[in-house]
Length: 281
Image (cartoon, rainbow, N blue to C red; front, side, top):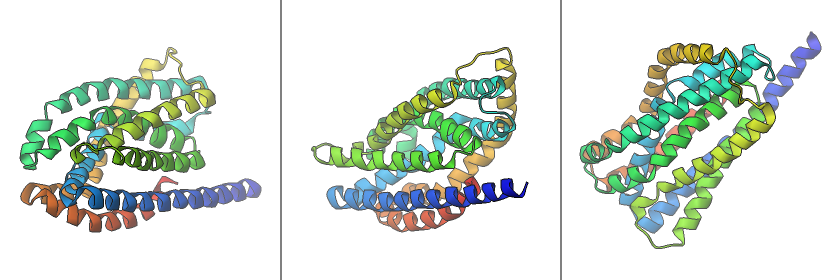
């Protein structure tokens, strides 16, 4: 028993260390991202970029409907190779694929009202560019925050988080070499999430072979919905709380002002992530 306890303590510390390295990489990526956009496109484009990013973080939380939380809650109770775990995971993914497909289409009709609310024509271009990204981000939430975290594969968790930001940076460098409308830059999120989705589905399919539609598949559909309904509102509020300042400044001030403010907000958000890493582990 004592040996098992030491194993879990050692695993916790090693997982925590790797996730803090991932957080450092996240912070550096965020700084570079903002600096590159500000220097090459100006503070107005940076302002639009961060307003789009705020919406991009909030909407997938609604699309995933609390299913990542449900997966994280139930999955540790079963052996990862069991039929129950496979049905649990496959049902969660099916729910989010259906919901995110419907809500992403619905989001298309909100682009003009949101752009009018934020009084920015650049937002129309930016919001349209993230639509596919919203779909993939919603599913990736289940994979990373539900399945990988639920299985205590925290090293994988850290690696995939790093891959996400590496893909964002790489795509920004690629797009930066071509002359195009800077308001289109949020497409880097669509690019990164779609590539990450392909990596995740290949890796987890090989690891778990979770595509199982057994008799308890619909049982888990019901369980996920009931749990998700209870947890969605809290998750959405947490994401809104972290982005409400950017959106409120966008409503009352110009894109240029949002761009200037977003640099300082980046550091505040980075400090918050320090505690989220511990929470995840």
